[in-house]
Picture (spheres, rainbow, N blue to C red):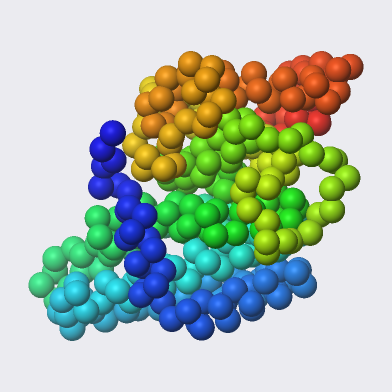
Length: 311
């Protein structure tokens, strides 16, 4: 399957993370964002994000007025957006559960700003973009950077940190923030949770980070909380994408896991009705196995945080 140019490939993302932004600066931003999130000072983080958003807009305007070439100013836009996405991700990972919705709203406001435009001296309309991705309509590299962080840190996080991050991402996808692309992260979570053979695990497992933990070390219960968030918060876009067989994803993202292949789920490299049915059956099977006495009923909430609210 060929993927459209809506996606940057793995090599481009790796290159961007190596070359776009100084490593030391990103590290300091993450340290500051983590500290503020743990201290409950989300305003400090949004102020940091706001300062970089201002720099992005200012550099774009200055570049247009000075008539500099795209080769001169687009690398700066890429670096600054990388910093913004890093701060959102870090804040989501370490903030309290009471502050997660605030982060989603901040992201929605940014996306809702639409195209960043500026008229030059020639009265021509210029649109800020990175490659073919427009700021902020296309949220350039946001989905790609979240997949980068998945590969880098998902296994080493604590359970609560994983749930924080995927509450943020699944809710954003459910709120129609580049939902087709962002649901790629949902595929990764659901594939690892439901399409991969794993031990069930323990509800009482220690909720700690572990730098030595690998993705294959995770249990079903390490992943279940994140998986149910994608099935709840992002249910509408996932169901819609499944109904049309949406498959515009890189192969390493959209591929089936072994259990889905064994079950005969069609492999189109993305969403299908059969794959969605498989995820639902696997989830309900896990709930039934762990709690035979429970029956799932219709929720009175539109987007509940957990299936526990209606089982």
